[in-house]
Length: 508
Ligand code: CA
Ligand code: CA
Image (cartoon, rainbow, N blue to C red; front, side, top):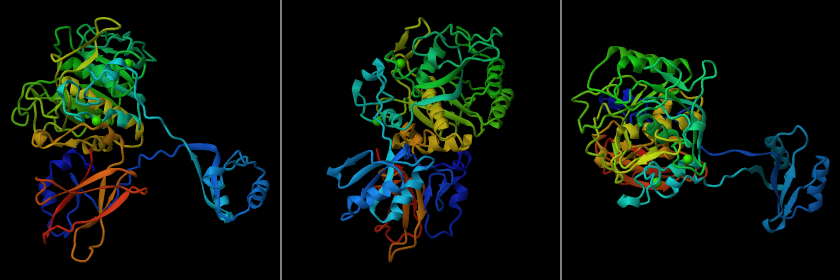
């Protein structure tokens, strides 16, 4: 499913007002009816550039194919007799894989000709705190008394992508321990001024961490993955630019925060993590974030940890109404909103894991910190920031709004989070990096007026949900997409309803 954007999700009434459509299909926040032009599938199409696989038709004599190979001046690399007459054949010099496939298909002598596709091993990082299960928010199998799968589906997502090494993420915080064994390789360096970010308190390019918060946040979004040490970030590799605007007492002022936002904006950051806030509106802070928005930068803000409804008691920057701000509350290992997390059906966008955290610490190069005492939206926000870094790396042509749609549209929704945030859901990294689930109308079939096609990536298990009012959703059908990424569905139980809403969600 997909969101149009934050604004449209806040404008449901105008959609509901359109009552003349007989079939009400939707993806949350937007009408279906056309497949998004910007929705590339996530199917891997990497293949060997110098060879293809062909299988001879039954009855085609070996000499016939051999003569074709001879005409093409190529020799069979491997023949696999147990699989019919499967052959691996090289390309002619200068020939492309599609052209070679076409030539064999046009010969009439093959059942098929196809690329020699690359496959990948499922990726599991070897970082000990991940392997031990300490990082439950990435992969929850019930350790620590939690609910299995109350997590962001990181291992499934890492089959799709682990690296955001070309993406610069600015962390507005207390700084970073640049030499930490599990951060050093992912710390951005300034090729012109030197240093690794900006220290607004000292006016230098050395934002060293003297408190710890910034190093903890940095490790959640981008500790070095699969290096055999410590933890792994949501992104295994990324460029973390530290913007030190908080002192060793965890106190920071808007002036310093704004200087760091401007530094990030003018030095190539694509995402800004702001695990900070206050119940005070600031025009200058709003303006700085709006300028970042004009530069296409996504701004991730924590919702705060006071158990407050921040629609009623606005908390900023989470509460600014700017479409590049994504605000994040925090959930427990049971996928409930932690009662300490601020919430808001309008001013919090989504939730992410944030209790019993464990991450890189500033005290030494091999220092880590974690346990039940370490919780908060400060540590949930970098989950979302890491997801944005990976999504930006995977979908480089998309705008900040499109990338935000992917992440917000991919959440796992739960009744307990409904009304607590815009999406009513918790971050799911796999969905953020996968093709969205789209619905498009088909002609009515007989007595069943609600008939449509569900489209996503191939072999994806999808649930169709229906609603009479956009508020209450009921699963009505579960199916797995075919090789073309689709299945069709006619609602045989619509009970003569004149209108009904539908959406597709990922089966978990
Ligand atoms: Ca999972
Ligand atoms: Ca590591």
